[in-house]
Length: 127
Image (cartoon, rainbow, N blue to C red; front, side, top):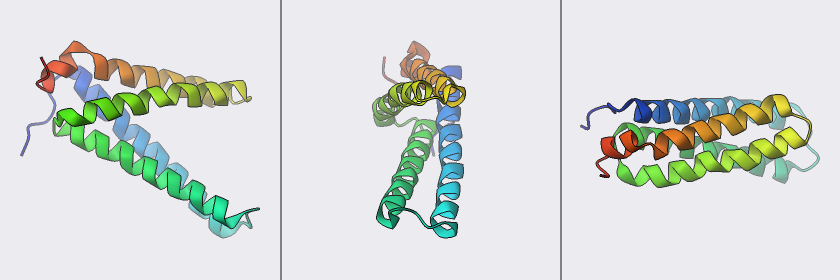
């Protein structure tokens, strides 16, 4: 069994990814409730959105787990996922939900920054 991450930047990256997975799990719960309790305009569309959220929850959680176990391969996909939060947050902010978009941007940048840090590379054995 691998040792837990020791570099503070890697610990923060794992924590952010796990927090994002948990937040997405809450969103999945809300989406499932909405799918069941209301009559969506398109049931197929509602189910696909919910399924997409489930997949993204699994991706964020899986990347957090892999990085916790110091799997080097997970760093690249995790960086991509974090950077994808920037345009998502920008869209939310420019669409009138700045209270949600700006924190999304900041979390994405913080997550990418922790993953790009030299200490994280060293902790993953990528010198």
